[in-house]
Length: 318
Ligand SMILES: [Zn+2]
Image 1 (tube, rainbow, N blue to C red):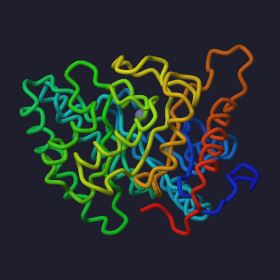
Image 2: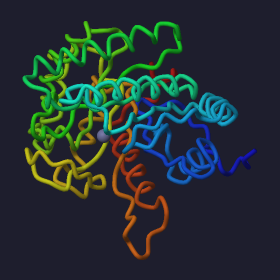
Image 3: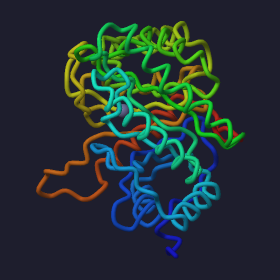
């Protein structure tokens, strides 16, 4: 068992828990993942449950799963799983589409085992032909997985669609692109949205302009209806507006700027939605201190949250 000092300190529930994607290699979900969360001050966590650049579907460790579930529940830390990057239901390869379904099924089942609230999956690209053909594959592979989740009852994780930076033939970049994507899934109640600020900026949403965040959130509600936004990936952008490049920067150090995150944290549509940073950790800095830059990003977002003046919540995010 871990010493208490290796775990995050329980905090009162916040309007927007602020956390990070945490590593789990080595000592596992609690020993590595929650210890990292403690070091950087994370109030929410996201993890991989498989190699993000592979198709393997490892079984997990039931004891680690239970320890993680229990610790997150006791500390009030919402947890999320990020599915592997290779998943693409719009692939031209039938084998890749099948593997995508197996990989996503694995992430959903592992998410349930560790008590995660949702699984983030990139919306993919139409490489198999026109958009309509890709969305037909999305429907035929993903709807059965959503129906399977019914067996988990109230503890079923949600599937969180993450629009990408709008590169090439990507299926969703702009928020409006989510409309026919969620329609292809019959607007299933377990479908939510994970909004990545860097991706949205890259796809042309001008978050750096005053009111840009509100305009993007309005377009999202217009596309999928209210209440679908369940998670934010809070990342600044190395590249300029509309660059269609996916290079994350530390909060306030990119072209989006800190003010946009303040706007996001004050907007009614983000009430109860956790923020997860996926920012650079200075891996190549010679004088790097592990977690220092992530800790700084989280502190910055907490300051912006305090400045936004939102009261703490009394419940856990739904
Ligand atoms: Zn992201």
